[in-house]
Figure 1 (cartoon, protein in one colour):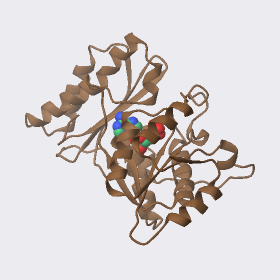
Figure 2: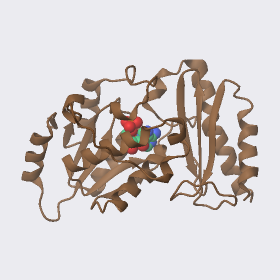
Figure 3: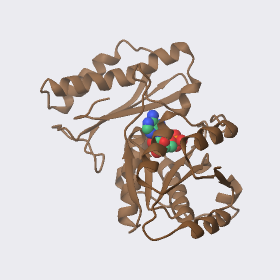
Figure 4: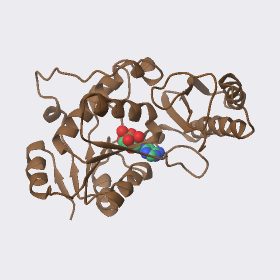
Length: 284
Ligand code: AMP
């Protein structure tokens, strides 16, 4: 039976009883509405840890005004079933008032790498993310925490947080799980009607085009970007917010790419925002 906690103290007490030398605690933080992407993080955690804690918390702090906090999809009964079936040991589902009681005002502020891309389009987003992840890390005290490549800038900033704040948590980044047609799985895909769903394919198609050009020997970032813009022409309803061709450590733009380069993009289709990325040497 999977255990479930909504109070950090109760979770902490239970974890204290199960923490032992040589026993590894894996942690998978999520906002719920689970899909195979989330569950692949659980698989990874189970493969290397003795005990897997998953959190489900739609973190108000990382949503800006006018974003989709209220309509973000939620289905706890379904999530419970999926998490248990996949082998989560303990589910942690704190309420917003538990995480942010009145007067809670300290924040974890990221560095320079948060100023670009997602951070530029969503001011304050990464401060919200790092603050909640910091709290969750203290509540769970995992040995290893698992994050998806899908949110690459988030993964980069969390790595920076544990490094810069001397946190003894290993961070593992897991490849993006996709539908058969290439669309990266996302809880937000439920917002897409069939037409929008078709347009959404533009993101992975543009990334596939960049990967193809890289394999053809193209190394200039401007040429790769031009190839992506060209691939996106047949997706007129996609409003592209950025195409980023960056180094994997600091998310800084680079001129000459190599196999470790990250190519990331964000686009809106209607009122839905989608993001995707690849490591250039690996592809989709
Ligand atoms: P979220 O619930 O969207 O906050 O995501 C929770 C975790 O799952 C984050 O580390 C995400 O990067 C990861 N994740 C989301 N979508 C995918 C996917 N398609 N493949 C792999 N990991 C994912």
